[in-house]
Length: 135
Image (tube, rainbow, N blue to C red):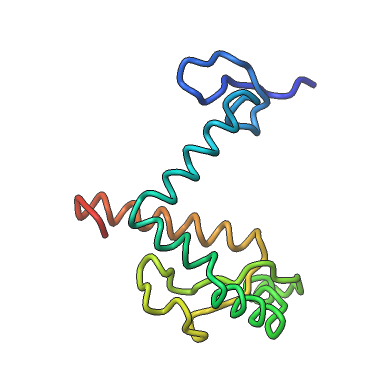
C-alpha cells in the first residue's frame, strides 16, 4: 500500500513529500528559522519564550515533576503513566501573574498536554474572533 503524499507547504514549491510532514528538506530549515525568529521578536510571544527558558521556571518544573511524577489525566482514566510536562491549569497567556503559582500547576504526559494545548488555543482563537482583537 502506498504512503499518502502531498506538496511541500512552502509557497511555490512542488516537491512531493510524505503526508505526515509539512515541508520538504530544502524548506524545513527555512520555516523553522522563521518561526524561531517570530517567537523571539514578537513582543507578546517573546515574554512567554523567555519565561519558559528562565532558571526559576526550570527549577520549579523539575522539582514539580519529582514530587508529582504521574499524569493527572491518565490517572483520572485509571491509567498510571509517567508525566513529561508541567502544565499551567490556567495558561499563562491568560493570566501571566500565575506563572509560578503551584496551585496552578499539574503534571501531564505529552499526549494529554497536546490535547489540552490544542483545546486552549482553539478557545483563544474563537474568543479573538468574537471580540475582533486581542483577548
